Length: 219
Length: 93
Image 1 (cartoon, each protein chain N blue to C red):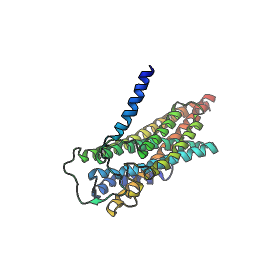
Image 2: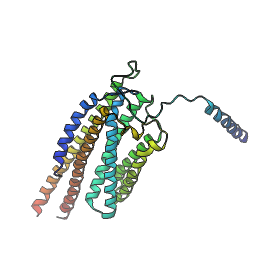
Image 3: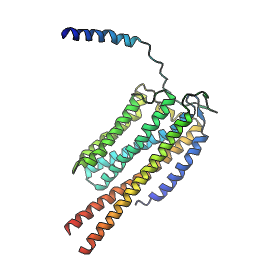
Image 4: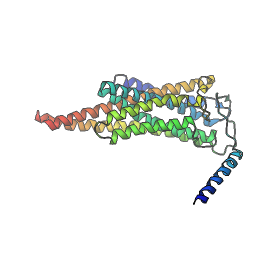
């Protein structure tokens, strides 16, 4: 296991446990009231999802060019985490939207592009699971498409007319909201990093197990 | 058959603009910044915001802990299998 795993996990767990208290003390938003507090974890999860998608995409690109198993392990871990954190984003978003907009879902650019990106990484995992031997390269190309989607998801609210708040809400956050928000972002990025390390370790052990089985067959 | 097709096309041509002319429900406006206030804003809310916030945060905690637990379990299973295969190989060496 990576030597940074334990310190990162300890810091991430402490921050993750303290985050709700900071959110509780943050001021209410004038238009949306209490439900806006979902934002602190929802937006932080969105950033963590982008991080996981980048890890998967970069790992896939490295795997396609260098054929290193370590790059493939990184890609698998990133893709699985993109799906998990993406699910959080796609569930917490509608819970917030139902109160703020009066509807659970809108087929606007941000929501739809996020769903498409999430489905691309689901396709990656399905391909790895059921694609058979040699599916790693095809899956890597799928992950690259998934990563290419990230800038579209991010900029969609500024380019197209959507109900989703613009990216400008984050730099314009008032001091009472800014502190808890960035605290949650750091907490989620650390949690994501720690889980990525753990998941990569699982993939490493699986590859070692496959090698052991090959040795057992030869002997 | 052609008459029916012509009738359907005519209906669509008439109905399309008629639906478009209907007054659209008022959509909330897109926000470009959040404005803080000191307390809850609307005491007569139809869906309690507490429930939605509780579900959102509960879901996040359960899913993340569940996922970490699942990875730990899978890791433990693979490690046990590695030990068992290693034991099988060792006598043959």
